[in-house]
Length: 97
Image 1 (cartoon, rainbow, N blue to C red):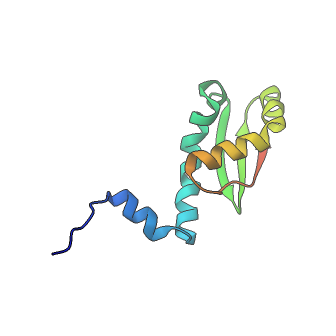
Image 2 (image 1 turned 135 degrees about the vertical axis):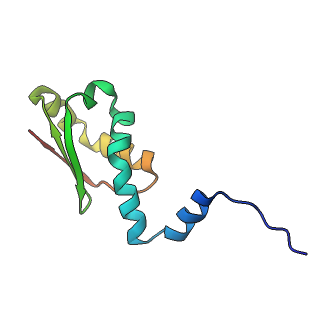
Image 3 (image 1 turned 90 degrees about the horizontal axis):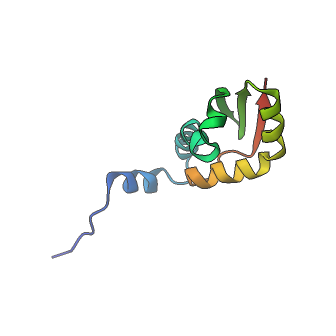
């Protein structure tokens, strides 16, 4: 008789979709949720619409000063966002006014 290891449905789905376009789409949809976790509530207050297209995250920031600060830190932000979602989803960030 075989003994089976129990795994969560989330783990099974992640394994099933790993390396597919569907995985990329699922990870892209997590980016707006983790934006606040990575950057904090103060940044979220000035954040408008965001969208990931072809590896570029487009984010509307309603403060010119904050937009400049985030621009200077964009490489670190990209790394932290990708780490948080568990994959390379964002390659660049475009901060829009």
